[in-house]
Image 1: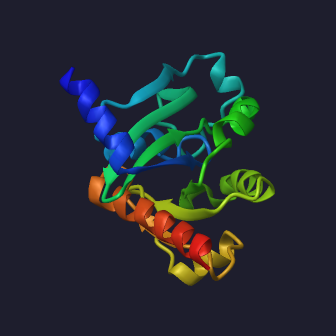
Image 2: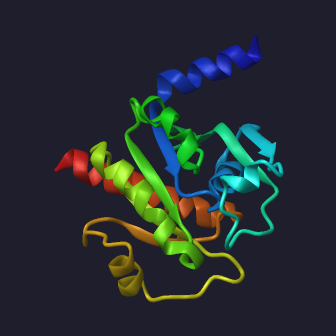
Image 3: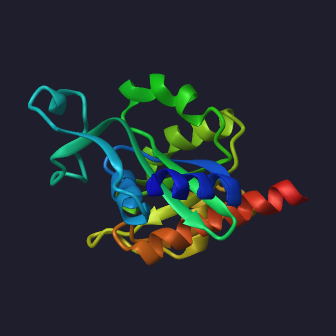
Length: 192
């Protein structure tokens, strides 16, 4: 009963917002949702199989042993808003889920990896063709090359108004800052 009351309080005191975390295979979407979620996240992670290596390019992510096969889901309550976080699978074969996953989403946080920057273009194309508001967070891995923001913006072909941040998806503070950049961008666009 107490749980039902607290859930009811969330829905009446906070504006619900659906956000999608997108990016290429192995960029850290599941890790980011795990770092941000105040509830135990729903993950649809499965072990990569030998058969999967024929379709999943592990170049640059050789240490990866699992993959999202449907969605990740988490929740984060912030002042006045409850964010429902939906992590999208990164492989092309799962794009059939894309239209349903982004339905009703207020925005998308696109994760990128400087070790495989070209992998981000397909996701950015999906987001832009759907007309979704978005921000880009470059997930910094220990072996990622560092580039200045202007070089990253140029490499990703981003408009000057598109938020671009560097984050560590494992770190809740850094992950939250990325999400805040997206939410502030959405607020600016909605209020202008």
